[in-house]
Length: 309
Image (spheres, rainbow, N blue to C red):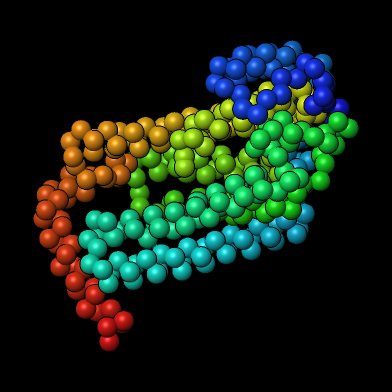
Protein backbone atom coordinates (compact mmCIF):
# COMPACT_ATOMS: atom_id res chain seq x y z
CA UNK A 1 0.00 0.00 0.00
CA UNK A 2 1.09 3.59 -0.60
CA UNK A 3 2.57 5.46 2.32
CA UNK A 4 0.35 7.96 4.17
CA UNK A 5 0.27 11.46 2.77
CA UNK A 6 1.18 13.04 6.13
CA UNK A 7 2.43 11.94 9.55
CA UNK A 8 1.32 12.69 13.09
CA UNK A 9 3.90 15.45 13.59
CA UNK A 10 2.95 17.32 10.43
CA UNK A 11 1.76 20.86 11.28
CA UNK A 12 -1.12 20.49 8.82
CA UNK A 13 -2.69 17.74 10.96
CA UNK A 14 -5.33 19.02 13.35
CA UNK A 15 -4.51 16.84 16.37
CA UNK A 16 -6.73 17.18 19.43
CA UNK A 17 -8.18 14.93 22.12
CA UNK A 18 -11.82 15.41 21.15
CA UNK A 19 -13.20 17.03 18.02
CA UNK A 20 -16.33 18.94 18.97
CA UNK A 21 -19.30 18.43 16.60
CA UNK A 22 -18.78 21.66 14.66
CA UNK A 23 -15.03 21.05 14.47
CA UNK A 24 -15.69 17.53 13.21
CA UNK A 25 -18.01 18.78 10.47
CA UNK A 26 -15.41 21.32 9.38
CA UNK A 27 -12.61 18.72 9.31
CA UNK A 28 -14.72 16.17 7.45
CA UNK A 29 -15.77 18.82 4.92
CA UNK A 30 -12.05 19.13 4.12
CA UNK A 31 -10.92 15.49 4.33
CA UNK A 32 -13.69 13.85 2.27
CA UNK A 33 -13.35 16.15 -0.79
CA UNK A 34 -9.58 15.70 -0.55
CA UNK A 35 -9.96 11.89 -0.55
CA UNK A 36 -12.36 12.05 -3.51
CA UNK A 37 -9.88 14.20 -5.46
CA UNK A 38 -6.91 11.97 -4.57
CA UNK A 39 -8.49 8.55 -5.09
CA UNK A 40 -8.41 8.52 -8.95
CA UNK A 41 -4.70 9.33 -8.80
CA UNK A 42 -3.71 6.58 -6.36
CA UNK A 43 -6.04 3.92 -7.82
CA UNK A 44 -6.55 4.90 -11.47
CA UNK A 45 -7.70 1.41 -12.54
CA UNK A 46 -10.32 1.03 -9.82
CA UNK A 47 -13.63 -0.53 -10.93
CA UNK A 48 -16.34 -0.76 -8.28
CA UNK A 49 -17.38 -4.40 -8.64
CA UNK A 50 -14.15 -6.12 -9.69
CA UNK A 51 -11.83 -4.05 -7.50
CA UNK A 52 -14.06 -4.46 -4.45
CA UNK A 53 -14.05 -8.24 -4.91
CA UNK A 54 -10.28 -8.14 -5.39
CA UNK A 55 -9.88 -6.17 -2.16
CA UNK A 56 -12.09 -8.65 -0.31
CA UNK A 57 -9.97 -11.57 -1.50
CA UNK A 58 -6.94 -9.91 0.07
CA UNK A 59 -8.51 -9.98 3.54
CA UNK A 60 -6.61 -12.65 5.42
CA UNK A 61 -7.71 -14.45 8.58
CA UNK A 62 -5.43 -17.21 9.84
CA UNK A 63 -6.82 -20.57 10.94
CA UNK A 64 -5.95 -19.57 14.51
CA UNK A 65 -8.10 -16.45 14.11
CA UNK A 66 -11.00 -18.50 12.72
CA UNK A 67 -10.85 -21.19 15.41
CA UNK A 68 -10.52 -18.55 18.13
CA UNK A 69 -13.58 -16.77 16.77
CA UNK A 70 -15.60 -20.00 16.63
CA UNK A 71 -14.53 -20.95 20.17
CA UNK A 72 -15.49 -17.53 21.52
CA UNK A 73 -18.85 -17.69 19.72
CA UNK A 74 -19.61 -21.04 21.38
CA UNK A 75 -18.45 -19.60 24.72
CA UNK A 76 -20.83 -16.64 24.30
CA UNK A 77 -23.71 -19.02 23.56
CA UNK A 78 -22.82 -21.14 26.62
CA UNK A 79 -22.57 -18.09 28.90
CA UNK A 80 -25.91 -16.83 27.63
CA UNK A 81 -27.51 -20.18 28.48
CA UNK A 82 -26.10 -20.02 32.02
CA UNK A 83 -27.16 -16.42 32.63
CA UNK A 84 -30.66 -16.76 31.16
CA UNK A 85 -31.24 -20.08 32.96
CA UNK A 86 -30.27 -18.58 36.32
CA UNK A 87 -32.44 -15.53 35.63
CA UNK A 88 -35.48 -17.64 34.72
CA UNK A 89 -35.13 -19.57 38.00
CA UNK A 90 -34.82 -16.32 39.95
CA UNK A 91 -37.89 -14.88 38.20
CA UNK A 92 -39.96 -17.98 39.02
CA UNK A 93 -38.93 -17.95 42.70
CA UNK A 94 -39.76 -14.27 43.09
CA UNK A 95 -43.19 -14.28 41.36
CA UNK A 96 -42.21 -11.91 38.55
CA UNK A 97 -45.09 -11.48 36.11
CA UNK A 98 -44.41 -12.98 32.67
CA UNK A 99 -45.01 -9.54 31.12
CA UNK A 100 -41.64 -8.75 32.68
CA UNK A 101 -40.33 -12.28 33.17
CA UNK A 102 -40.26 -12.92 29.43
CA UNK A 103 -37.90 -9.99 28.93
CA UNK A 104 -35.85 -10.42 32.12
CA UNK A 105 -33.48 -13.22 30.99
CA UNK A 106 -32.59 -11.40 27.76
CA UNK A 107 -32.19 -8.08 29.58
CA UNK A 108 -29.95 -9.54 32.30
CA UNK A 109 -27.81 -11.30 29.69
CA UNK A 110 -27.30 -8.13 27.65
CA UNK A 111 -26.60 -6.10 30.78
CA UNK A 112 -24.00 -8.68 31.83
CA UNK A 113 -22.27 -8.74 28.45
CA UNK A 114 -22.37 -5.03 27.63
CA UNK A 115 -21.40 -4.08 31.18
CA UNK A 116 -18.36 -6.37 31.36
CA UNK A 117 -17.34 -5.61 27.76
CA UNK A 118 -17.55 -1.86 28.30
CA UNK A 119 -15.61 -2.02 31.58
CA UNK A 120 -12.85 -4.11 30.01
CA UNK A 121 -12.59 -1.81 26.97
CA UNK A 122 -12.57 1.26 29.22
CA UNK A 123 -9.83 -0.30 31.36
CA UNK A 124 -7.70 -1.12 28.30
CA UNK A 125 -8.04 2.33 26.72
CA UNK A 126 -7.48 4.32 29.91
CA UNK A 127 -5.08 2.22 32.00
CA UNK A 128 -2.73 0.63 29.46
CA UNK A 129 0.17 3.04 29.05
CA UNK A 130 0.91 1.86 25.49
CA UNK A 131 -2.68 2.40 24.31
CA UNK A 132 -3.80 6.04 24.34
CA UNK A 133 -6.32 6.15 21.49
CA UNK A 134 -9.00 7.50 23.82
CA UNK A 135 -7.07 10.57 24.98
CA UNK A 136 -5.34 10.94 21.60
CA UNK A 137 -7.57 9.39 18.87
CA UNK A 138 -5.15 10.04 16.01
CA UNK A 139 -2.46 8.00 17.79
CA UNK A 140 -4.11 4.89 16.33
CA UNK A 141 -2.24 5.83 13.14
CA UNK A 142 1.14 5.78 14.87
CA UNK A 143 3.46 3.34 13.12
CA UNK A 144 1.71 3.56 9.75
CA UNK A 145 4.30 5.86 8.18
CA UNK A 146 5.66 3.00 6.04
CA UNK A 147 2.22 2.07 4.74
CA UNK A 148 2.30 -1.28 6.58
CA UNK A 149 0.06 -2.13 9.52
CA UNK A 150 1.99 -2.14 12.83
CA UNK A 151 1.49 -4.97 15.36
CA UNK A 152 -1.86 -4.82 17.17
CA UNK A 153 -1.92 -5.00 20.98
CA UNK A 154 -3.16 -8.35 22.31
CA UNK A 155 -5.80 -6.68 24.48
CA UNK A 156 -7.21 -4.87 21.43
CA UNK A 157 -7.21 -8.13 19.48
CA UNK A 158 -9.18 -9.76 22.29
CA UNK A 159 -11.73 -6.93 22.23
CA UNK A 160 -12.14 -7.41 18.49
CA UNK A 161 -12.47 -11.19 18.70
CA UNK A 162 -14.88 -11.20 21.66
CA UNK A 163 -17.13 -8.55 20.12
CA UNK A 164 -17.10 -10.31 16.75
CA UNK A 165 -18.12 -13.54 18.53
CA UNK A 166 -20.92 -11.69 20.33
CA UNK A 167 -22.28 -10.24 17.08
CA UNK A 168 -22.12 -13.61 15.32
CA UNK A 169 -24.18 -15.02 18.19
CA UNK A 170 -26.49 -11.98 18.17
CA UNK A 171 -27.33 -12.35 14.47
CA UNK A 172 -28.63 -15.84 15.26
CA UNK A 173 -30.20 -14.77 18.57
CA UNK A 174 -32.09 -11.82 17.06
CA UNK A 175 -33.85 -14.19 14.65
CA UNK A 176 -34.46 -17.18 16.92
CA UNK A 177 -33.90 -16.40 20.63
CA UNK A 178 -34.72 -12.77 21.42
CA UNK A 179 -38.21 -11.33 21.81
CA UNK A 180 -39.32 -9.94 18.42
CA UNK A 181 -39.67 -6.16 18.49
CA UNK A 182 -40.57 -3.37 16.10
CA UNK A 183 -36.88 -2.64 15.55
CA UNK A 184 -35.65 -6.24 15.36
CA UNK A 185 -34.80 -5.96 11.67
CA UNK A 186 -32.84 -2.79 12.43
CA UNK A 187 -31.09 -4.64 15.26
CA UNK A 188 -30.26 -7.46 12.83
CA UNK A 189 -28.81 -4.92 10.38
CA UNK A 190 -26.81 -3.32 13.21
CA UNK A 191 -25.25 -6.65 14.17
CA UNK A 192 -24.41 -7.40 10.54
CA UNK A 193 -22.84 -3.97 9.95
CA UNK A 194 -20.89 -4.11 13.22
CA UNK A 195 -19.60 -7.60 12.45
CA UNK A 196 -18.62 -6.54 8.92
CA UNK A 197 -16.58 -3.63 10.28
CA UNK A 198 -14.84 -5.87 12.81
CA UNK A 199 -13.85 -8.43 10.19
CA UNK A 200 -12.80 -5.90 7.54
CA UNK A 201 -10.74 -3.65 9.79
CA UNK A 202 -9.10 -6.11 12.34
CA UNK A 203 -9.46 -0.53 14.29
CA UNK A 204 -24.20 3.71 27.85
CA UNK A 205 -24.60 5.39 26.30
CA UNK A 206 -25.49 8.98 25.43
CA UNK A 207 -21.96 10.19 26.22
CA UNK A 208 -20.26 7.22 24.56
CA UNK A 209 -22.50 6.70 21.53
CA UNK A 210 -23.75 10.18 20.71
CA UNK A 211 -20.75 12.30 21.75
CA UNK A 212 -17.48 10.35 22.05
CA UNK A 213 -18.35 8.09 19.11
CA UNK A 214 -18.38 10.93 16.53
CA UNK A 215 -15.99 13.29 18.31
CA UNK A 216 -13.28 10.69 18.81
CA UNK A 217 -13.89 7.68 16.55
CA UNK A 218 -15.29 9.44 13.46
CA UNK A 219 -12.67 12.16 13.91
CA UNK A 220 -9.87 9.55 13.92
CA UNK A 221 -11.27 7.57 10.99
CA UNK A 222 -13.07 9.82 8.53
CA UNK A 223 -10.59 12.67 9.06
CA UNK A 224 -7.41 10.99 10.33
CA UNK A 225 -7.48 8.03 7.95
CA UNK A 226 -7.41 10.30 4.89
CA UNK A 227 -4.07 11.86 5.80
CA UNK A 228 -2.44 9.35 8.18
CA UNK A 229 -3.51 6.01 6.70
CA UNK A 230 -2.30 4.40 3.45
CA UNK A 231 -3.47 6.50 0.51
CA UNK A 232 -4.77 3.50 -1.42
CA UNK A 233 -6.26 1.69 1.59
CA UNK A 234 -9.25 -0.48 0.57
CA UNK A 235 -12.69 -0.23 2.18
CA UNK A 236 -12.31 3.39 3.30
CA UNK A 237 -15.68 4.48 1.83
CA UNK A 238 -17.36 1.21 2.86
CA UNK A 239 -16.17 1.41 6.46
CA UNK A 240 -16.88 5.15 6.59
CA UNK A 241 -20.48 4.65 5.52
CA UNK A 242 -20.89 1.78 8.00
CA UNK A 243 -19.58 3.93 10.86
CA UNK A 244 -22.04 6.68 9.96
CA UNK A 245 -24.88 4.12 9.74
CA UNK A 246 -24.04 2.88 13.24
CA UNK A 247 -24.15 6.47 14.50
CA UNK A 248 -27.57 6.96 12.87
CA UNK A 249 -28.80 3.79 14.60
CA UNK A 250 -27.50 5.09 17.93
CA UNK A 251 -29.57 8.26 17.44
CA UNK A 252 -32.60 6.15 16.49
CA UNK A 253 -32.38 4.10 19.70
CA UNK A 254 -31.70 7.16 21.83
CA UNK A 255 -35.06 8.42 20.57
CA UNK A 256 -36.74 5.44 22.23
CA UNK A 257 -35.06 6.17 25.56
CA UNK A 258 -35.88 9.89 25.42
CA UNK A 259 -39.55 9.20 24.59
CA UNK A 260 -39.86 6.73 27.47
CA UNK A 261 -38.28 9.14 29.98
CA UNK A 262 -40.51 11.97 28.76
CA UNK A 263 -43.63 9.82 29.11
CA UNK A 264 -42.68 8.72 32.63
CA UNK A 265 -41.88 12.30 33.67
CA UNK A 266 -45.09 13.81 32.27
CA UNK A 267 -47.64 11.05 32.94
CA UNK A 268 -46.23 9.11 35.88
CA UNK A 269 -46.64 5.82 34.00
CA UNK A 270 -44.29 2.97 34.77
CA UNK A 271 -41.38 2.76 32.32
CA UNK A 272 -41.85 0.25 29.51
CA UNK A 273 -39.83 -0.62 26.44
CA UNK A 274 -41.74 1.26 23.72
CA UNK A 275 -40.12 -0.94 21.08
CA UNK A 276 -42.26 -3.87 22.25
CA UNK A 277 -45.36 -4.84 20.32
CA UNK A 278 -48.43 -4.07 22.44
CA UNK A 279 -49.53 -7.39 23.95
CA UNK A 280 -52.89 -5.93 24.97
CA UNK A 281 -53.61 -4.84 21.41
CA UNK A 282 -52.67 -8.25 20.02
CA UNK A 283 -54.68 -10.32 22.53
CA UNK A 284 -57.56 -7.92 23.13
CA UNK A 285 -57.02 -8.25 26.90
CA UNK A 286 -56.30 -5.42 29.30
CA UNK A 287 -52.98 -5.23 31.09
CA UNK A 288 -54.70 -5.93 34.42
CA UNK A 289 -56.18 -9.13 32.95
CA UNK A 290 -52.79 -10.13 31.59
CA UNK A 291 -51.22 -9.48 35.00
CA UNK A 292 -53.86 -11.62 36.72
CA UNK A 293 -53.23 -14.46 34.27
CA UNK A 294 -49.50 -13.98 34.68
CA UNK A 295 -49.68 -14.23 38.46
CA UNK A 296 -51.51 -17.55 38.31
CA UNK A 297 -49.08 -18.88 35.72
CA UNK A 298 -46.08 -17.79 37.75
CA UNK A 299 -47.36 -19.36 40.97
CA UNK A 300 -47.96 -22.61 39.10
CA UNK A 301 -44.43 -22.52 37.73
CA UNK A 302 -43.02 -22.00 41.22
CA UNK A 303 -45.01 -24.92 42.65
CA UNK A 304 -43.67 -27.16 39.87
CA UNK A 305 -40.10 -25.93 40.34
CA UNK A 306 -37.61 -28.71 41.18
CA UNK A 307 -36.07 -26.41 43.81
CA UNK A 308 -39.17 -26.95 45.95
CA UNK A 309 -39.22 -30.75 45.70
